[in-house]
Length: 232
Image (cartoon, rainbow, N blue to C red):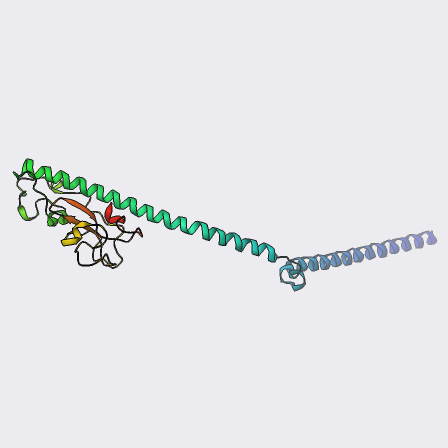
């Protein structure tokens, strides 16, 4: 009975020793795994900062860069002149539209002077009246009593339009000036004042009160005389 009891005690001692060793081994394996995992994570996180890895990243080749530069140059040569032409055409169209509104307004007021203001047939609005956008300016021949409705006094409902081709130094882009001397020919050789050719200070509109015609008081659209915007 004593020998059997001793054998059982030795077996239990060995089992405890083996279990303890297994537990210690498992902890070491787990710690080693955590260390490896941490090192891998750090390596991945440092990839973008590692110069050895950065050196392996590739950019554009010289041929690719050269082709891009050539394409940009071709687009610049082709597109920029077209863009400039479109701007010129847009300004010309705006000028013609503005002149259409002004000329319609002048004709309307010529008829109103005769029909409502007892003016002699052929009486034309003055430059001051067109510039003020009011047929009753100066009270002759139309007065505010004759044309009581303020909207009916206007040459252009939304105000005198601007001349898109006015010079950058022009005092006004909407002013209506009476032509003088050779300036009334509006052939591009002289400005509205008739003293000299068109300059950067010219702008707005030129009006001939003797015949009721109006045109752009500028010569900046790049077309040779007598075909500039003053001829529209």
